[in-house]
Length: 189
Image 1 (tube, helix red, strand yellow):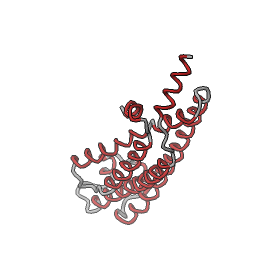
Image 2 (cartoon, one colour):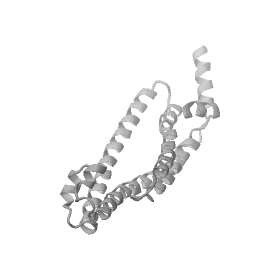
Image 3 (cartoon, one colour):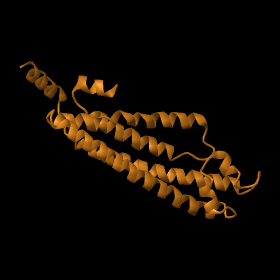
Image 4 (cartoon, one colour):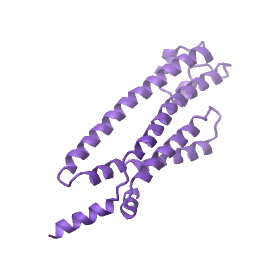
């Protein structure tokens, strides 16, 4: 949907900027969650977070507008490589942030639970609750420790949203309609 809108308007930078803004705002809102946050809030914030998808194709559009048709496949292949590499690096970084935060917070908020057992539980609601006996006074602390670990990961994502917002402005205000018209003329000749 955004790709066709970009082709009609001619500029991709506003969509890339908006993706960075919505990512940052949504991650900031998600970081306010706690174990008692109602499902309606989860849904609304995640829908807002989903709007970041409008920026996914903007890098491809920017590359296609900056290079010739012959260079486009190589540039797009490199772009996909870079996207996957960055995703892999930040998946590992997010996992490290989650692990370190969870271990630190479990030791403080639920001292009778082994941090290793908390990590081994996998984070599922039933698995986490089964780490302590039903009605344990430490259960709210354990749930808060998991919540804090997830929030720490969203802080990392929020910082990436700020970086993408800044980098989006550097993409250059290029009217892609001019290149498309020029390519159509060349094809007709």
